[in-house]
Image 1: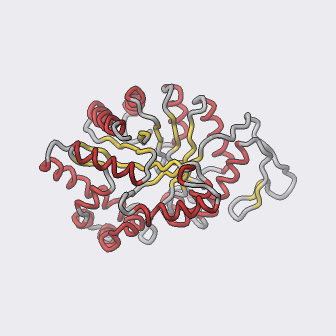
Image 2: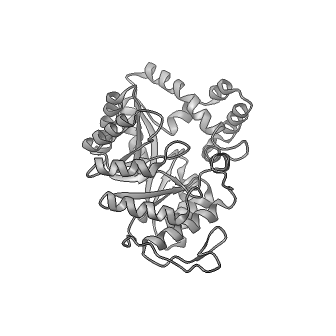
Amino acid sequence: MRTATTIEASGGSWRETVEFVVEAEKLGLDVCWVAEAWGSDAVSALGFLAARTDRMLLGSGVLQVGTRSPVAVAQAASTLADMSGGRFLLGLGASGPQVLEGLHGVAFARPLTRLRETVEIVRSALAGDRIRHDGRAYTIPLPGESRPMRLSAAANPDVPLYLATMSPRMLELTGELADGWLGTSFVPEGAPDAYFAHLDAGLAVAGRTRADLDVCQGAEVCFAADEGELATIVDDRRRGLAFSLGGMGSASTNFYNAAYGRQGWADVAAAVRERWQAGDRDGAAALVTDDMVLATTLIGTEDMVRARLRVWHDAGVDTVRLYPAGDDLDARLTTLARAIELVRELP
């Protein structure tokens, strides 16, 4: 099982973030994904990190389709692949209505169509083809005097493409088209029905198997000295999970809430969202159970984390994204180092 992490270029000291990535590479981390969300852009940060690292893979985790044209995505991917010496992974996601419509002013309509067509156009552009596309989301070139063009950069068709998806139809699309799946809200015990059945259906459409897809899942990792400290850590994490269930997306569209619902917590997830949307943040957090926190994280004593990593491995996770806890850089790196060693112990 490979190891990865995800960083953001905003929300703190960029210098410290770069130091974290550089030191993480020295620890043997395999992949660093750079998030975008509604903060800084990922492309600029990835270009900087390409110059400061030598071995680890660097991925966009994720670029939101609709905020850039598909060809602009292909241009960025081609440039970053060249700058990094072939170490770039292109991660794309459909985002959600709150970010696309509330921040970018882009309609969220037909996200599945937009994602599929973006993948098709990006792959065509990276292959060095003249770009022609007549779809529901994109038409290239537009009717008129323009003619199909190709990128002037050298063809680079081998850039691995990952999709960040959660809903059943999006998961099927991932299995059909992608080289990897960037998942979240992952409960290994519930994954066969909630995730893998849909991924496998898409893989079958393309005549592929699970071996053709890098399953990349992420979770916070935090080591507790004993059960008492663990209880405190879990209690501190309730509000963050309540935000995912109640505040990510709109009142009617929340893919995180739906994912937890498909994995056995439909009633609790719905109640958390109702309280969060009503403004009762504390009440929403109080509804989050210990099991919900522990099921989707790597939080526990070292023995608990070791055992949980084995469960993730046996469930079919190929790459684990580790979000190390810690109050400062040294603490986060210490946590990351311990987690990497535990992963290395796995068969």
